[in-house]
Length: 266
Length: 276
Image (cartoon, rainbow over all chains, first blue to last red):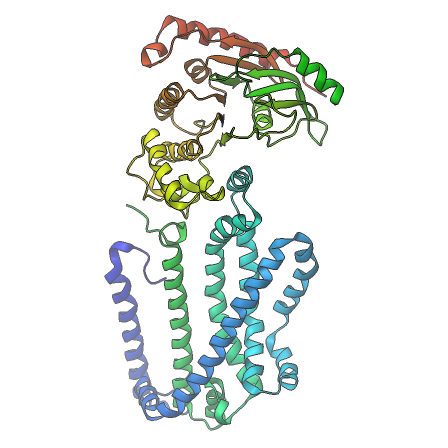
């Protein structure tokens, strides 16, 4: 999103950074000027200070959240892709099972999380299951769409050359599906983080498996608002990092040929 | 079916080489009851350049797809290289189809696109690669093998598509309005190159177009078709010597053939009684 005009790469970085600095300065200034108490709105400086001070605690929690996020994302990609391939193999399978995939998607994870936490004894596993459910659907729906979005002319060409089903899948359907799949990855990576945080909120697990959401809960109870902001900042940072990783992966895979990654020539 | 086969095959004169395609009283009725083709009899001889010319809806594309074995006739049948009635694939004989669009794989470079038919047939990579270069050279695209399709113009993409057809060394080349989407100047250039290629490689081509000038310029024989229902109206032999070039385009003979086809086409679009 940051870089739209390729000729203004520098501007694309400088402008948002400037806006960010101005906003932070304004925030700092207003908090100081009106002497807003730190349990309502902490100043950015204080948040940064807390981040450094409570780093060991926050780092531990960040790693827990990251672990759940990545495991859920990995599982969602694995299961989602397999399900999509199964669906794409036959319309009958898709017709039979797709409504249930939708059912899974439309049920809020907050509503089923308590059940999962009861059923799955191991706390981390329970969180991973919740987050996977949230992240699964975009992978399934996008990959199916991609596997079906094959140029009919190319399909004809493959059939005329007596391509086997396997050749058709590997050489035609998978490359055709790639742009859709990467679109799914982008959505799903963000959702697995959201799923992980929401599940932590519901589970409220402390101790060794205390994630960032637990720190936010605790900070809220104790009115330790600087800590709450620090944890929030880390979650946001994780989300942005995930997004950037997906954008890079997508560019590496599609950059040479797909319209979505092409730089317009002027 | 068998009785008809015997009768029809007895009627066919046996020449030196069996004709690449014989269309034997083939008809096509679509599922919705529309009669796409009246019974058609057509023989394509070795080395011919036959053009199917007609207005939209005359079934010229349907006929070409039948010849390509992409569509099976509702009744009647076809024979390829004098082989089994109704089955393409006489051993050692290949037909290829060139689509209206270039239909290239956008994710693959020109080389991989041209190599595709060989890859699908399981030809070893080294041998396949060795065959790609001459095919690209034939269509005038030597040195473009590392480009992606999007980097090429429409005309060049069509050339890649033709190279992909030629790489299999086909005995019969079927082309469905291959240059229909191109501007006239590019189209004339590609027509010229195709004709030179046909002449040099002694190809057999069946070509579909709705351009009279393209038909006259290219063909040894033009099959004029009429619509509603789709049928063959007349066959016109273009008795002009090869190789043909721009001089032919502006010749008296060219104009005369174009006029003859124009009259026939006008007849074709009025002759049909519209179906209720």
